[in-house]
Image (cartoon, rainbow, N blue to C red; front, side, top):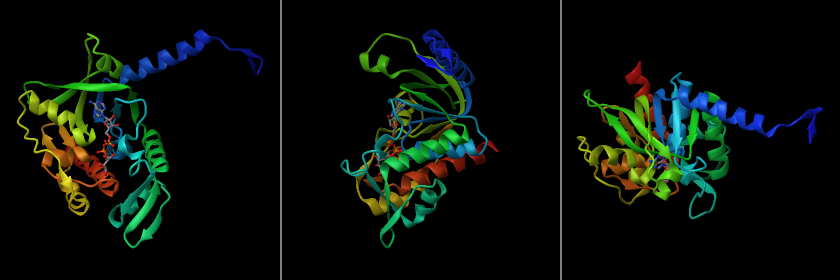
Amino acid sequence: MHVSGMELDEVTISRAIVSEQSRVLLEYLDVDVAVVGGGPSGLTCAALCAENGLKTVLIERKLSVGGGMWGGGMMFPRIVVQDEAKRLLDRFSITSTQYSPGYHLASSVESVAKLTAAACDAGVEFLMLVSVEDVVVKGDGRVGGLVINWTPVETTGLHVDPLTLACRYTVDATGHDAMIAHMVARKGGDLHIRGERFMWAERAEAQIVGHTKEVFPGLVVTGMAANAVAGECRMGPIFGGMLLSGEAAARAIGEALR
Ligand code: 48F
């Protein structure tokens, strides 16, 4: 096959991919912010950190970002956002319509796409199919790095040692499981995880920004991870709190690193 009279060489294609991603991986082994989890809160946080000029990497264990947003509510690909967060839909150019006063409807597919596009435009780098399996905590008592491995290594149980990256701040955006917070607590870090509570959308949404904070030196929690650590309720397919929490996490890190 000829494109513009040029012969395509498979090895050149391979070399381009491997050399560029190797360069990116080397460059991003030392970052300002490592966001773990590419759901709505993680994408929002990463996009805003990068917009603030911070070198930001987003680590996602799956093949695609978006987390629990794609599925909307029970696979109906629509999400609801309340008045308080409507400005964030607008900020990311996500189309919405008012369903009834205070309830704004958006497509979950468009929401994931536009949050992801904003993160890309801001300069976030993505490590896909990579799982965080542990944290680095040294004498200063801070989470100063993350231990990463390919997700298929984890899922197949292969005995392959991981690699490590350094970060000034880690964001636990891993959703309901609050994976990073659990890693810290399990290994003896002074972090008490209260565990997520019942469905109560009004309460969960009202409290989530308050729960978005540095819960252990160097570790900020956002999204459902923030509510899980705080012993707060869940909210189902209303997503305003996820966007507001991602924004609050980026703000907290920006202030801490200023
Ligand atoms: O679950 P998720 O979408 O987190 P979120 O931003 O949003 C929660 C909502 O989707 C929904 C809700 C809102 O009403 O309740 O559930 O808090 O996205 C979490 C992402 O983290 C990835 C996971 O694959 C998902 O995409 N993840 C989880 N553990 C790891 C990870 C890990 N150890 N390493 C890398 N990525």
